[in-house]
Image (cartoon, rainbow, N blue to C red):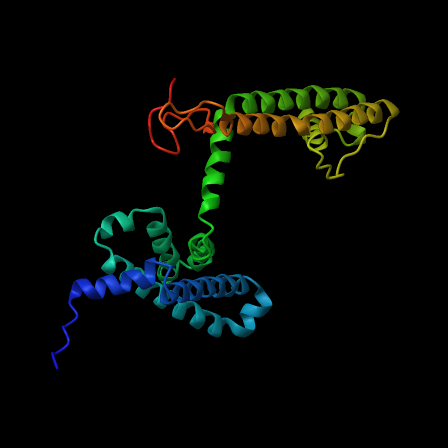
Length: 274
């Protein structure tokens, strides 16, 4: 019987990498799900520490749980650095920075009192759920929405500027009509009331009393409902434009259904006619 080959450092790193970074294997999925539960437990622990009655009775236990979780996360972070060929790239990546920030506050709390409250940033690590449950395809949809917002930013800025100007004008009117005796003590206070009314928030801390003021208020309310559809229309039209499918056909395979900004055929890869 031939002796079994010794496991080298490279094989060991590869095995650890499969467990920690890949969710396709049973062990990798188990690790990621366990990690998510640990993150949730840490968030609950930190949240309970901010409740005075709970913290007073169970402070020692909560701190012990927090330190145990932090040590586990520290070991996990060290293993990620160890099994990654280009550890510097991982350390400076988004998840690498989040993983580091997830463990620093507990150690900083030894020097700076209250720093452990920053541990709520561990919630960012729950983004790994996209990888665990194969929801990464939705990231593309999020990128599409972000692209639509970016390309609509000029129109959105103009819309927000218009709403602000209308808020100042209507606020000034309400200040002249209602006056300080009815709670509209200044133009900024009146503008605050106007903007909360336009946006449909309506805190109710200041309300018009006079008939003229109520008429202006009704006009602002109706105006607010009309303005709600504007940003929706801006984004919708931009999304349609970005995701528009054309009837351009490929000269190589004659197939249609390409995106408006496509330069190559999605079916055969040949260049599309401009």
